Image: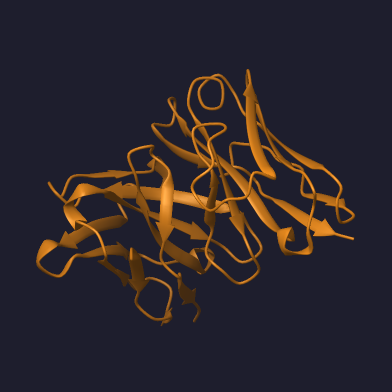
Length: 118
Length: 110
């Protein structure tokens, strides 16, 4: 069965970076884009961007350009999202999600809580 | 950064029909597919409706989606206690060249 399993919760100080992993299984990794979506406490969902695991190509939401980096390692079918220069309002749950041929996010990771606090 | 507007809350008694609106613009809802996601408390979102009105396998037919112009709607008929969750719409936005989500609606079963 399709699974996306994310790395555990992280705590960082302002100005630091964080890298979250998303280990996939149960499907051909290179056939489906992986997206990253975040949700601040009590807030709505916010799309951050996607990575094409086949080519490594990426597309980032405008508000994240310059400080988010999405990568992948096809040998271990894992996608990564790194956010730099963290601020307190980057405190959020970060999700990875797979998009299917209908461009729907059909499978999601369990989420990784990132807390930014001095 | 939510570009799509939803009512913050909606409620109904078991068996009732509840409708949630999603208001966007010509660059998103009017010109691209709308998706709906259900988020139970403390869990990741789950795909509920894709391409405006299609249900993935396993989603009950009590859930239905529609779109008209710059607005979309999700209807839940025969409301059940397990439908108590947050619901968010989403669409691609041509102007932003990215996906946008709605502000989210919390559905309460009275």
